[in-house]
Length: 252
Image (cartoon, rainbow, N blue to C red):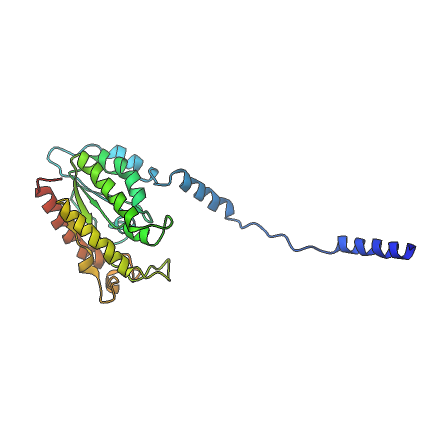
């Protein structure tokens, strides 16, 4: 019996002294990543991005017909990474990369209405809805956001230009996605809705699409989604034409 107890005691001692699995060292940037995520959650629509610029911009000058471009990365990068953003024109870029239409809707009062523009171009965030940037999204959810933004704009006598989603047959950040058909469907609704509401439909899609339903590779800096300088050069006159038509119209 004493031998059994001694054997058990020795076994327990050896087990207790055996090295355990190595401790996992924390990643050095974990705290920074957590801090960024907490800040993003605290300001999900990123109202802070343009808050100070909006306050300092002031009211339009007498006779000035200010136009706000509201959108996601394609708007955000215009004139900041590629192309020129309408030099000499009273146009205001209020794009934020990665945003979906529900975030645009939350920003609409601050980044559009408070700037007292004559017109607004609502553009390009629908692709982020389709790619699920803010979780699963449906066409109906997209439609609700667009209809709500149009209602707010019209309540403040701001003319609305609805821009098409740009073509894409793939998303570089989501290789398994095949969004071309869904983009065509959402654009068809945008065009029909604009016609019913007597608004201008800005068709970037037709000028940029290739035979596979994606963006012509030579017009995109990532070969898929985001225009390069040549791509923005195609888009600029289309936007100018749509703005001229909207400002000449009698219905906002």
